[in-house]
Structure formats: C-alpha cells, structure tokens
View 1 (tube, one colour):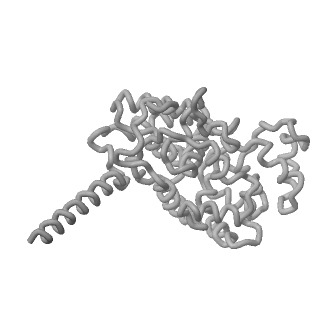
View 2 (view 1 turned 45 degrees about the vertical axis):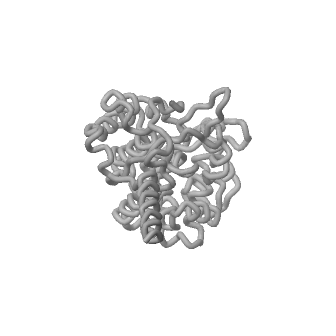
View 3 (view 1 turned 180 degrees about the vertical axis):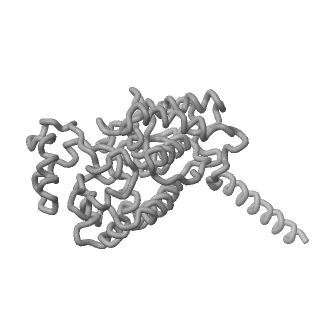
Length: 322
C-alpha cells in the first residue's frame, strides 16, 4: 500500500513537472494576443505602412532585422538591444555594423503598441509582425504570424558574427548554416528570395563585380559605375539587390539569377550548376510556388528557439532590458 502511495505520489510529481515544463515551453500561436491586445495587427501595420511610404527600402530593412534576429540564438529580440558601457549587443557585429537599419521604426511601432496595450507585446513579436507586413505592403504574400515570443535579456556579438551567413558564402556553407537551424535547402532558396527587395552596399558585392566570371558583363559594368574597385572608395554606395523591381516583392530575383545578374556572391551561388538550380528555375517560372514556399519558410524561421512562458521578459523599450 505504502509503495502504491509513493508511486502515485511520484507519478503526480512527474505529471506536475511535465505540465510545468510544458507551460514554460508553450507553443507559439496566431491568436496569442487576441484578448490581451486586440488591435495589435492594425497598430503595427499602420506604422509600417507610413514608414514604407516615406522610404520604400524600409520594408526590406525591417524584414532583414527579423532574419538577423532569428539567426542568432533564435527570434528573441536580442538584435534590438543597444550597446552600453557594461553590455555588448549585436548591432556592432560585422553583419550588422553600418548595415542593419530600421531600429527607429521598430521604436515607433513598439511605442504605438505600448500605447494600445502597455507591457503586453514583446519586441520579438513586433519584429515578426513588421516583417510580414513589410512583405505584404510591397506586394508579396501574407500569412498568419505565430506569436507568444518573449524578449531576451542577453545578446551575443560573437554569435552574430558567426551565425549570420556573409555574402561571400558558397552554396555548401549556406545549406549547412540553414540546415543547422532546421531550415531545408528549399527554405534557403525561398528565403533568399527576400532579396527581391532592398539594397546592398558596394563593400558586399565589390569582389563579385570585378573578379567573378559567372556574371553578366553588362550587369557587372553597370554596377561598377557606382562601386569603385579600390577598397575604401565608395564602400557604402548602394545598389538594388533586384535590378528590375527593387521595391516590389516578386520573383524577379530568381529570373536575375538565371541571367547571371545576382548581385551578391551568395545570391549567384543558388544558380551556378549546383543542387539548387532546379529550385531557382521553378520559382522563376512559378511565382505562386515561390510565394507559398516563402511563407512556409518564414513561419519555420519564426519558430527558431523562441523564449516562451516565463523565460525572458516583455521589454518596455526594445533597446534595453527592463
């Protein structure tokens, strides 16, 4: 009898432990804030809309912030934390320094959300919604964003330096980095299609336009006009990642790759005689197939290692820990 009692007591303890662990690792859901912040989506969208109206490039910048957040210890808002005298964040990591932008727009979105529902919505979730809205506003697909992430109290400059694939990456490096985060090779190609919008700095494509042979010569010459060969000269001069429609979210990026007009080395790697050529061809011929795979991949990326339950916090100001 005593052993039966102790066993049932053990079972109860185990059950409570499972329930507790389950609650701290709660699943994200699309209706997470439906009661606590019913006007969340319209609040975020109107702020994103006005930012893009002011500068069309901002949509790409916000989308890129979400990538750079999720690829470093998960989608936890760590990228948004400012450096202080006692804290080193991710903003000055090599992939972000003089490059990641849109933090002021995130501040504006967050303050509008705080006015509507103080202390409820995380910065990590604000970024996830802003990324979706940016794609949709620029003519791309829409999707239901899974929510319930909490904000990190830490950041890692070294993880940002090592975790975000540089534009010099070759195909195998890209595939292995994406696979390590649970993203397939198809996800890699679909997510790279976000380079249908946005701009890149001369320093990130200089070697490609002067040294590489798998590039359309007239395209290379066009880009060379605004990106001098000498390092240190015109480093921050910009060029569109998609030469055809740089502020429309469409499948022209993939058509460019087939025509050897990928701006970054890492872009053209997706169509260079390797395993991803067929996926690029498919997306260039079928925009709806690209759109649906892009949505699937964005949702998967948004699921990378979120903080949920009682982990992390809900930051009041996205730039600093409470």
